[in-house]
Image (cartoon, rainbow, N blue to C red; front, side, top):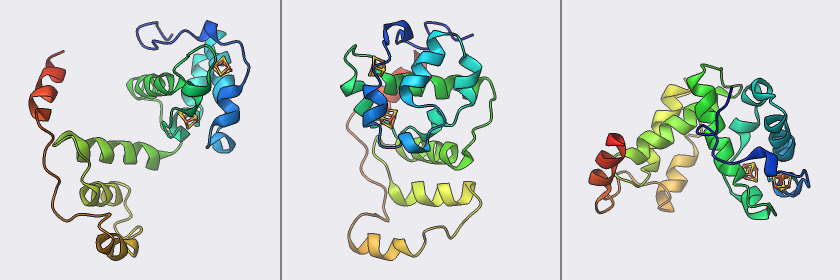
Length: 167
Ligand code: SF4
Ligand code: SF4
């Protein structure tokens, strides 16, 4: 059972116009399209929703949220559902996606800015493919898309994180 505190948006506001799905850049890869996912939530098919690859394929681009005539923030629904799936121990159908999420958060959590080199290295190691995309690294370093040293921490980021953990 998914409660209102777990998903802050109200699925009953959705009237199935499918504007969200029409604009979604990764809709073709999804087992349930965003509007179908909202419908499943409204009729109580939470298990179906939590096991679908949709919540893991979502790129968090906010197109659906911007297009929704009812101001439903579907992107945050996807976030909440991923959290719920992890809490319930439902295996991610795309394990690399979860690995990427973890590597991204770890690379971001220290300074508030992503250290791409660390993120890519952690992803490759956790995914068990240490040389994945390694050929791209020299080109990216030359184009300054990868930096060897970590970026400077955002001002006040550490105290903000401490406050967040206390909440
Ligand atoms: S936020 Fe996710 S569901 Fe919404 S349009 Fe972007 S990729 Fe699709
Ligand atoms: S755009 Fe909004 S109202 Fe339309 S189907 Fe998607 S969530 Fe429902």
